[in-house]
Length: 116
Length: 117
Image 1 (spheres, rainbow over the protein chains, first blue to last red):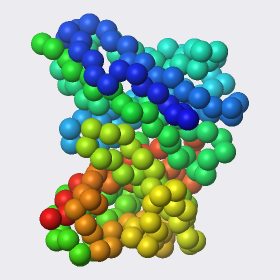
Image 2 (image 1 turned 90 degrees about the vertical axis):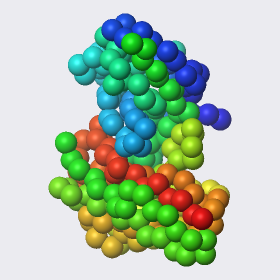
Image 3 (image 1 turned 90 degrees about the horizontal axis):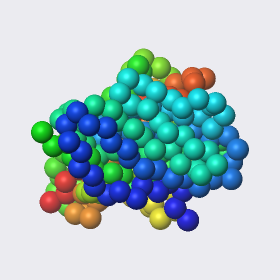
Image 4 (image 1 turned 60 degrees about the horizontal axis):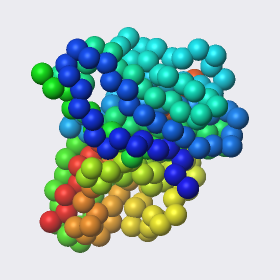
């Protein structure tokens, strides 16, 4: 079964507007972490934001915020005031406690395209 | 943040030859490193977990004799693609976390784009 699901293969957003990228996950582990990464065409993986399963508040990092709805098992990424440089692939990932070290399981990704 | 360096960033090799990819943690020690593979327009798929001083753990369907992993020190893991074939052409990327570091940290190398001709 898919552990991390990103239902939007591609999305467009107008520059300066906000956009939400969806991510749902599946785990029976009570302790887990959720990550969002940005991957530009160069291929590097850029860490954006992290949410722990026990965190009471939604994580925020600058223009990035994570809409964490634990009961629904969703961890959507919200990017405010989109910029042209935000155009990239975005991956949601999960780390579970039982994994060795910090192995991550990735979703299929969403390609975000920011329109000028 | 911590730095993971991966080399080379691009490599083109002939079919049947072997290619070695290095993954180094530059400012921290890592007992465990991870190797991922990414086909075009697809997600990252874990290939194997590299363990310092012991054998790597391979994911189901990954041939350990084809993808040789060596983690000889706390700062270096290598992935060797042996007898490469065109279907091995892909983007390979490693990640590492500081030993004893926070669970929020997982740093990635720059990735290696392998093309087998």
